[in-house]
Image 1: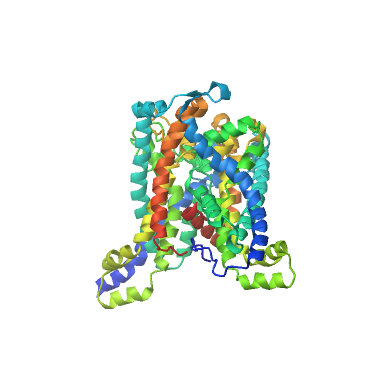
Image 2: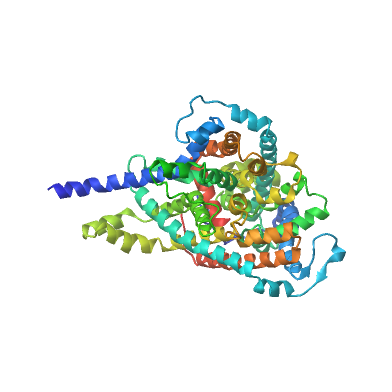
Length: 312
Length: 278
């Protein structure tokens, strides 16, 4: 299968006029059902959120909309909790990118060796990806529960009675716990992207290197890593985007607590808009979120359209 | 030459130990969930790591009936299947048009449609809520279905790629033999692009079955709860009763896990493609 057929509209042979108009009608008819939903429920909201972010509005009657210009953005800049939420997102990105990329790459390198059971391990590592974040969040809330949870019970059994962290109640710790859960759920996907990247490297390269007396570290450092640069970029960008999209896990496990220690942009937006009815302010946060992910996706798009390919 | 032998043994040993540690960390929480769902709550708390003394399905019965999780399960099944059918229909039709037909504004419409993948769903959540509120669709599955039917960018992209691989000569032959435009699409092109349908169905199954944000925002009535919402209210009301809770978590995860078990290759393909493009 090949999903890489980006751009290029295979219009090599231009059909005759008559055929073309006939096709036009069919084509528009075929696009219609999708567009009926796509335009009003996907595109219109993106335009609307820009407009909403310039309003002071509780979201009830359109008559109560009040134009305030950039006031929401000014407030945003002075809002300590907004900056804190942004900081949490950034911390999340940095740490998860580093840990997950390293872990996924290491496991991909190991599992690429094709020893007995290696495909079994791969299969299991991918499994959390198909689970719901709500299931994962609740499951880990139980596992990490301070008094009764199996993890702290395990710590007691192996004699670490003095280490009994309140995993989801300690403001210094909780954000890192969420990062751990996120990595647990997601690293399988990154790992498979790396495996796919590794499979495109011709094996005779390794043989040649071995003949020339290269150590395994040389092979990894001088052949594999440079050749995987593009895959690595893709993986890092994907992780970055998913860290800015972080929502379900926080809502289920901490609701942004304790003491706002895990509040991230999407959660702050949700609370402002739907709990406090500050639609304008919430929309301004949405615009920030949009700008960040847009820049990141644009970088990805740009890198990919420069012609490199990731085969899988 | 003992050291050389050791060097030869060491890597496999190292691989296996790393992989086993990974296996325990990844699989054990899920195994623990499934095993504990067969225990009574006191047993889960007292002997978290033991096998169930007397395995019982009581928790499942309790979760399904008393906690009304059965309702959520049926609701999710209904919404997910309708949404997948609709998305498949929309994506195949549009994908075919973009891959095999020529029409004015094709490139613009294609990029217009694919641009949807660049926008995270949170961004349009507030206006979406307002729109559905004005249409009186809050608290109705129609709002969810409208949103799902509008999230077709990935599906269109995949179907377009698959239809591109179908040789145009075959379609032209069908047309010359008197096949209608629709017949060419339905009876000739679609069967050749079956693989795309599987990729889309799997990707959207995982997304829809697990979707939390849209139901959380658009649904109010507990009777309409989908599985993630049902689990959420479970968490609020039954947090002390771990047995039924774990049974509900297991029921929510079993369909994706079982499907994954049977269609592992297609899952990995569909989800990596989704990650790259979504």
